Image (cartoon, rainbow, N blue to C red; front, side):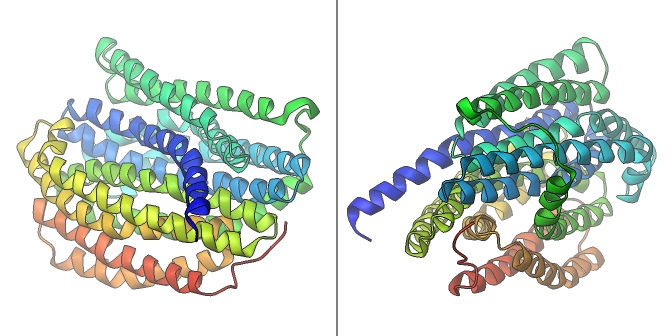
Amino acid sequence: MSTAPARSVNRQILALALPALGALVAEPLFLLADSAIVGHLGVTPLAGLALAATVLTTAVGLSVFLAYGATAAVARRVGAGDLRGALRHGVDGMWLSVAIGVVLLAVLLPGGRVLVELLGGQGEVARQGATYLRWSALGLPPMLLVLACTGVLRGLQRTMPPLVVAAIGAAVNVGLNLLLVYGLDLGIAGSAIGTVVVQYLMAAALVVAVFRAAGPGGLPLRPSLRRIGHAGRAGFPVFLRTLTLRIAVLLTVMVGATKGDVALAGLQVTFNVWNLLALALDAIAIAAQALTGHALGAGDAAATRSLTRRMLQWACGAGVVLGALLAVSAPFVGRLFSPDPAVIAAVTAACFVLAVGQLLSGWVFVLDGVLLGAGDGRYLAVAGVVNLLVYLPALALTARLAPDGTAGLVWLWAVYAGVYMLARAVTLGWRYRGDRWLILGT
């Protein structure tokens, strides 16, 4: 690759990745803020939040195909010169997101306590978790609409509106939650209520942004059950891929719940840190989705290969930098979320394991983004099952042999980062080496 094309590719990556980075980092700040605010209520509320947040992030995470599918499909159609078709597909996904959100709300409102107990919550921990989950369920329809709108805007290579909305939303969330939790003395329920209010405001703002992106031709708003059904079927392989990822997380949390309240509280904090770093790397993966989909839609396989090589270089470098930063800050992270010395010690030890894991994460996330942008959902679903089958025996040994407390938390993260992420790296790398994912056109 010559110097000039390399600079051009770097500018394209930065133009998409930097705003996406801001938006992605802002999103987990909602749970980080809730963890910090609730954590100062005590270890029991924080442990309850860990279980409720696992259910919520699972529900939302399984629906991430709304964003990923929209980004890939919209980018392909834009690359092929079909803006109207791109917008029509995006609107279908927005309607689908609202429908899924309503269904999830209907499930979680009556079933929140049962789900928390299934994850290992008992007594007061289960009560605190169920309270947070029931209130937070009211925000699921706008949460999923935010995903769908964000995917449409990314496919149009307009990543600034999601950044602005997410940043403002995160800031408002902190102030509102502090007011409700401490000012009005609503406890853990106040934290959930504040986040729900902000999610509705964010969804409204992003719907307006999609309207503006449509331009003079306007946005085709009328829902079509046939097209919405097609959008759902097209996203199903990505749903299965995401399901395997969430199963891995759920099983990890369930094992963590058997290692005592300190390990579980520490797992809540460190999973939030992991998600924050993962989404930072995912900013480059989002650029990979949009640029890969656009290049394939335009029928340019050579440009696709060139773009992906450059993005892999960026991602591996970012993983090294993030790992180093986390290693340096590890002794201070726990103090942000809990005054309890045992929780602080557990979080500190686990953060050093997370820091090493970042060296592999950049490679994994960008290759995942490339294949998502290529619409290679079927392979990703199969690979997800293979990765899970590799991880389960290692996790079972951890459940049986690992001690409680800090040591158990370190074991969990060593197995997750060292076994599960390595399996993902191998299966994604094997697919990338071939050409079966390089399908041109819309």
